[in-house]
Length: 439
Image (cartoon, rainbow, N blue to C red):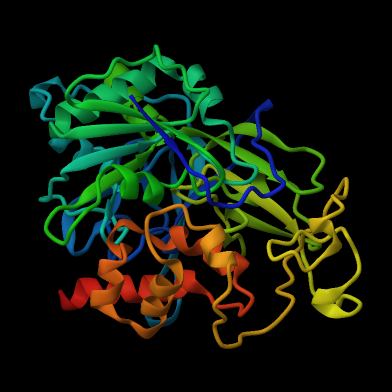
């Protein structure tokens, strides 16, 4: 067992969400195209078609063995495309999510890879480099199970894992059997370490420290970096639970646990919902707030073009809409504004309650070499040099500085602390796509 202490990062004033408040069941669920980087979709259904739990609804046009399946019984309600026929979302009107028949997969002689592909589990994996769904013909040199979450208002993973203990254990064991490579189980100090025993294929790594100690990019950088020839995969703990549930019961699990929470929101809690739930079916919405599938630092705005909880997201974050001008701008004397650079009184006099909203407090300007980038860098790199390489599309320099271990979310803290208001998340995706295309 490894103990890894992350000394640098950012501890935002948001704790984890631990209170389970029951079920919230939506009448409509959906898949959002933007959740799947680089995916070209080929639909297997049309609007009005009936679907059942586990039936395929679309595939990857470039890799047709990668299948996406319906988590419920229902009817395809909408298939929505945008400009240039971009896939926006597919929605399913839920008819039944309880009468799920067990699937007899024993005839497959436990060909794990075949089962994971056929029944829609393959998209749960994402690879580094490039942070995309891996090819159906590829094999990783290591797999990372992310069972720690340091995002603000994230649901407590240990609470969910304990509720689904048998399925989680089964899921981890399936990963070991399916791929026969080292599986790193990345957890925090409160994880029940007696749950699983280490062996030559399983290593438990305990991460301590502030965000981004819970991100896959941090784990990968410390434990097994990828190369252009050797890819590593990562998978979320709830996806592992789903895999274990299937191999224990023969059924597709239609549910997942998410936190619905926000700063100043009075009803923070963990809820059991249908995967891909339409948010306005399970939560009263207000025009004064923005609803984000994911966390504050890296998430997708829930709106009319993407009204569903994300495929990979375990939380819905709520934040007050901004836009109001502050007296004296960024040098406002108020001590209720959170600061990383120490330009507000709150750096010295902590308030009981901060003000958080969507305001940018500035516009785009040239990059400034300041210490805030170093303060939030958890990996072994020179952050300013990496960010310059990302902005200038310097492929060789970026690879030398570790970008192959990273995904877009690993740049979210840099975007948050950047006084120049540069969107490093967007620029990192552009560079990763360029590397993949030109290599």
